[in-house]
Length: 429
View 1: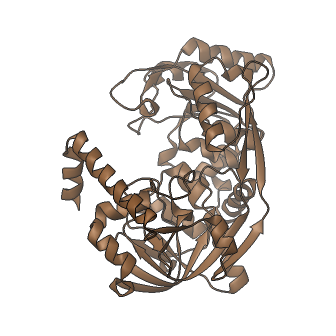
View 2 (view 1 turned 60 degrees about the vertical axis):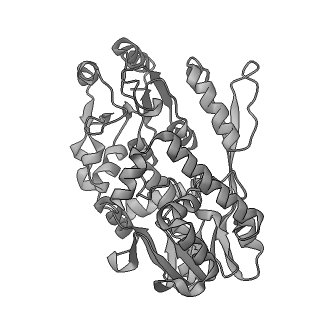
View 3 (view 1 turned 90 degrees about the vertical axis):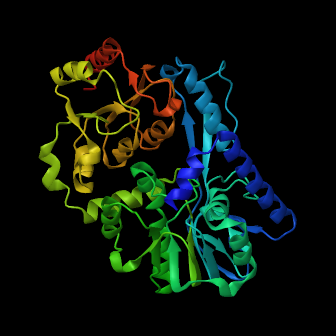
């Protein structure tokens, strides 16, 4: 498999694009010929053969962009992108600060009988050869033609084996009784999500799975990535799932008697899920013993990560250290320590990244997020939901040979100093 990936990555871009478009064309034909049909959220709710259980009402969140953020061109592009993603209209930029509304669907969990799975993303098929789309990467496409699970199945398993999987129920290599999948279709190459995506998208699925167990008395095993990290295993243990409850999935085919489908909250801010994760972590982690380790003024350093770093961090820390800030590498901390870090934080500063998602454990914390040339609204939206004060500072990228979002950048020390001084004058820090 590594050799295949190497050949794929080293192939000319035009060849890779040709192969991808060939795969997409095959998927398109399959959909047009009704060989590949889909099972959406609405289908799960209305299908007689599916046990559908809802447990929380829909949520709506109004994200209103403050004037202080409108000084950067990338902010307008990002707000427009997020509004399009949530299928809502932006208010005129001239008449008032723009805002958009996110809609979080009804929280649910569903049980489907006699499901087959195939490939590294465990592409799920019902007895009627319907693809279960709750795992897909792109929720804006009803047919799922561009969904990574479908493409990766073709890429790893080949069109012939994929076709046989659709047509031959006896081709499965394994069988399981009760399974819920924590795999997602975020990318063609299946891999465990980063910290923030795991915390905010994957773990909330266990809320639905636990509700299913409470209703039915059945505790399903969890389908997880084969190369899952130790801290991810630890987070599952915190939520009540030991190694015996896990199935490490790399690739292959299997048939599942009861396939449990929790809602995947990708791009859907659900305050109920956030509250559930917080309560579970605070109840089951002994974070209090770490509270005295950290200052209440925190700088989240990314010095051990190879992207999105502040190049002039040393100069920045001279200013921050004088004001009592402590530089911390969250990727080196345990889950208990990360909860404690934010529990005691009054101000958190740092380059944009997953560690900011720990603000769900904080209380009235001021968030100052640092960017290069590209703004991402994810942490700003989360801060709005949590009713936290949020600021953003923009710098200049220093490595143009990588994607904009991943570039290192330089932040103006004077701008950061001015912001902190203003917060001091206002009595906020």
